[in-house]
Amino acid sequence: MSDIECPGKRNFLGLSDAYASPDRSLFNIIPVPYDATSTYRSGSRTGPQALIDASRNIEIFDHELGSEPAAVGIATLDEVAVTVADPARMVDEVEAAVASAAARGRIPVVFGGEHTVSVGAVRALARREKPFVVSLDAHADLKDTYQGTGYSHACFLRRAREVAEGCVIGVRSLTREEVDYAGGSGTRIFYADEIAKSGAGAVDLDFLPETVYLSIDVDVLDPAIMPATGTPEPGGLGWYDTIDLVTRIVRGRKVVGFDVVELCPLAGNPAPDYTAAKLAYKVMGTIVKFGSKREDDRTHHA
Image 1 (cartoon, rainbow, N blue to C red):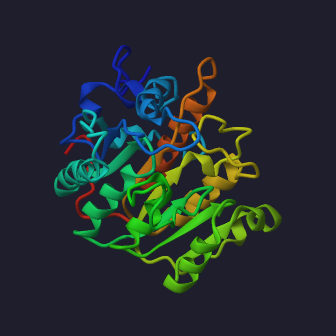
Image 2: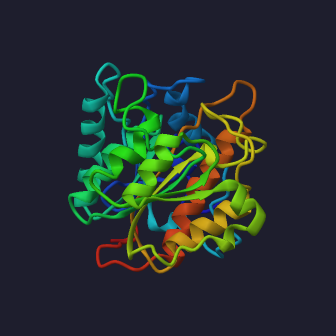
């Protein structure tokens, strides 16, 4: 066992204190157990802890990357104390937590919860560097309001587009109004059926700028490997296509933060929890290996 690991720790990956200090870790995980606007299947509020628990079974060494990404340090912060009855306040609370991590030179990683939690992260980072938001999602999330609120999980990218540019990849469910908004606002949509026909490598990402924020709704994955989500849609992306897209998004770019949201655990089936945890760790490793280096990047030895 590596000295990075510490059996019994309930943080992400079960890391020892030396590799899990908020001020000495490159990544700061911010769990947000919130799912007040879930519309088909609720329960994503339990997703962050299920993901963290499952992560303790992941091998620290990543053979594809040829490294132990956790060596840069991954701190698991306390859960955001969400306000279920007031989604706007919840977004503000997430914004404050993400802003604090970013101000300390960390890369904030938000674990949701429904996709609405990502709005706060984007707002916090847009005040600093205005990143381009790349959303991997089965749904466009471009509705202005849904079921009487603009702070619905179905409105994530619409709210994010108020402070940053963005696109969405993996879509297979949206409304005519969302298509019209996307066309009028210049929001690119990459559809899952087109990716299935041509492959993930055919998705042209050359338009992406240097600074990005990556938002991953786990329902972008095919429900055959990710059934544990609130609104599963058939025909999703496979594991390797998703990892290929993540690598191409990250390569040579500055990733100022990312999130993994909408995991809705299934009783008796822990496999999707592990898949979501593995995906989060893979994104971290990809950022470490392929992302552009930043002056404020530090390892746990800093």
